[in-house]
Length: 118
Image 1 (tube, rainbow, N blue to C red):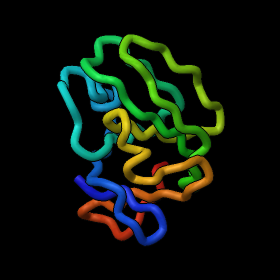
Image 2: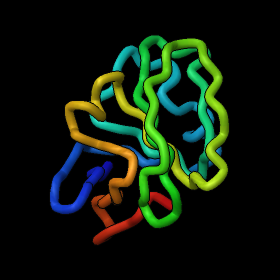
Image 3: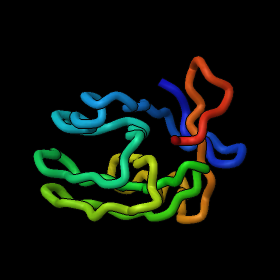
């Protein structure tokens, strides 16, 4: 586990799903999520089988937020071609955190100094 950071602000705790099985599972089976889940590499998601609505941010290799959207349950998102990572959080989280398109974010894991979602 680590932290999702924008500038000097810690937005939330974050888990990194960077292996095939952890990306495939994503948030499936959970009834809620505290913080965020970063899927990488990833450029699209779906919410089939989800128990709650989510906020989704598509992020390029430099950490630039390209697109955000709120996804209802049982939906299929469209790929964002320049995205390299996707951040998922409980619906309403991005508004609380102040996360917007154009922000530069990074994942700071417990064993790293600074990692762009890549």
